[in-house]
Length: 400
Image (cartoon, rainbow, N blue to C red; front, side, top):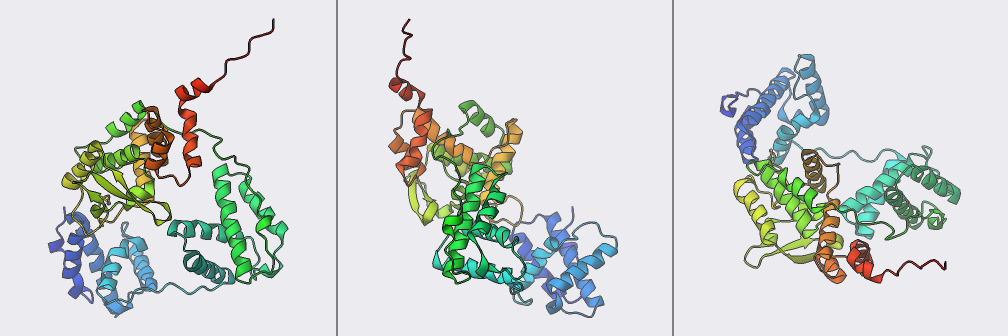
């Protein structure tokens, strides 16, 4: 295993190597990983010296040029721009390298998309995830337009044809995602003056009946298999066990689990603050078993870092987990347990279903799951078979 202290850096980056070494240690890089990063820094510094360049010349274009030279010399590792992120990020952080400025929108479509992003954030105040999804739909739609856009001539037929072409092969949920984003876009195009036509009515509705399906829950035996798949003797296992426990016992969404901060847990009161949809914050009771699982991760697994959230990456750099990271933990647990791949939301349905089967009322289930409308909670009435059985009428006897 390499030792960071043994890596010698010469050239224009030499004076920053000691600070970089300390920063890698602070971020939790292992000795071997830190040595690799310092060796990459040393190579970059030698390359800059050979070109008679200084640290300020390490622009994105120069980084690409350096990586190309590294590849030409026969190196097989650390050849992508991502490999240079720790070095470049550190140099930008201490102010010796200018932070790269995103390129200004060049094409008409890019300029419109940038304007649309500003509208979604400032005028409508949408959450970051919603903005991202709406921009994705906008790019899909604009990619079908000619270079000059020609939006002033946009017709209802074009809007409808795009929606139908995109939704034909999609699921109901995915199709709703497309039409919702498209409806937002055409509304913006009218408000911002790109077209003088109100085209919202041209966006077709998706034939998906609300509450028509059943909550997709899994049984207690499969929940036990998921939890048992986590090796609680390991750091990864303690974290994953805590994440799955929170999902199935509290019925949280993946993003809500990722957003839990250390300060959100009131250990004395046995409560936890949940940051839900529409920026709402609510308190939920923290069950003893869930608290034990979280405490096991915090005391014997979570790396020491400055991150404010409870759940972080195990490997350096130790940053907060994203909602996608929470879902990845669920999928990995399914693979270990020999179950079909499922997303984290399946455990939310499981929590609601199990509460109802244990005797909780629909109102209580809705309160725990923090549904804005009782209509959303009412779908769980379908899994209360004993209650439905009492309402069922006997099958009519034959007249004969």
